[in-house]
Image 1 (cartoon, rainbow, N blue to C red):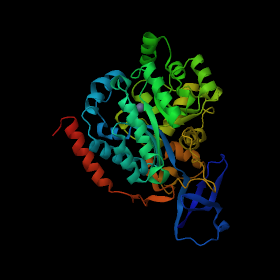
Image 2: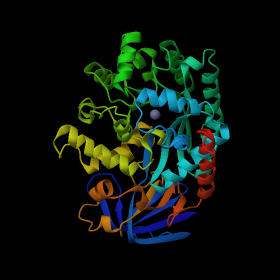
Image 3: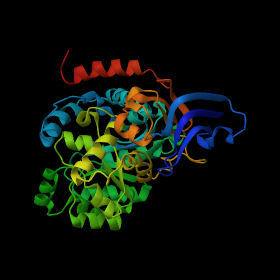
Image 4: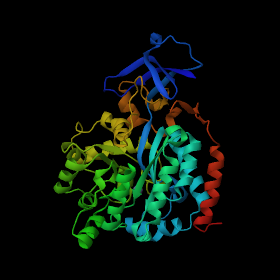
Length: 430
Ligand SMILES: [Zn+2]
């Protein structure tokens, strides 16, 4: 089936000036066939959408999430990081069932689709349930089971992760990419990280890990091992594989040199989570100076409250301007690029720009809204003025998963009801 969408504005993201007025995008078999002026493609198509006020742009990729944590949205708000994690989150997580995780993830996919995200990297438990939900939703998922080494002395969970990868690799028409997810160096010993690195090399899997998130983490690892989290990851051999580093807020010059030399992948910044948990602001300019690629993610809804990547884009831009005290050094274009092309590249995926041959992963924002008028600078409008609620259409791998604001792949009201009931039971409210 061949489809076409015509819109008033198309942002291809190939370069800052690549904005097409009154253009069309045509796709077939999950890939873009043509994009440009309306008359450029004369092949017959099976269906056409005409959205004169629509702004077409590449879909957003959320590089770091724990989707099922929608079940804990709002739990123990305002607690310090380790108290929040150890005293509030972990006890609830210990009670989660596979069904809880399925529904929590499915609700997260509804929230992400509605706010323009087309793919996400996830780390959680009961990862078959996560994969089932992602498969149904129509989204892309780079999925890993969160591994806490202290709870895996016999290596069974690591073996299960590898078995999960064999079961799901390439499934859901290639929308699911399994990875290994060692949680962090403060929950995984150096020996355990080495075992994960060995499995990643053998199986050809990428690695998703939290590194250098809080000052507490740096101090703890310095005391325990006399090393930084980045040095530990290097010593364990993790950088032999593609690595998604969630956070990377606290980096020394030595860490930056290691990343420049060894990192294949990149850092996924989660500015809202880092702000909310009081963990600090990522040094984007330092990383850029060292040639380290930086993408964007939300982290779980338990720490960020919302999975809206538009909020992450504007927060990223604001914080960098506050940090640099120079408004020109980090632009709306930089933020948009981080949430699309840069994160896709870190994931090793060819999405993030709109061009013939690229995956048909794009969204349509309603440009008729008051707060997006006039359209003097459409990229600034998208980053600073738009929110996820302005997204009306989502096309992922060629499938229209949302049209006119309605998700087509599953019943989101049922997901909301399930999560409401299950969350109340989990935290003991009846
Ligand atoms: Zn996280």
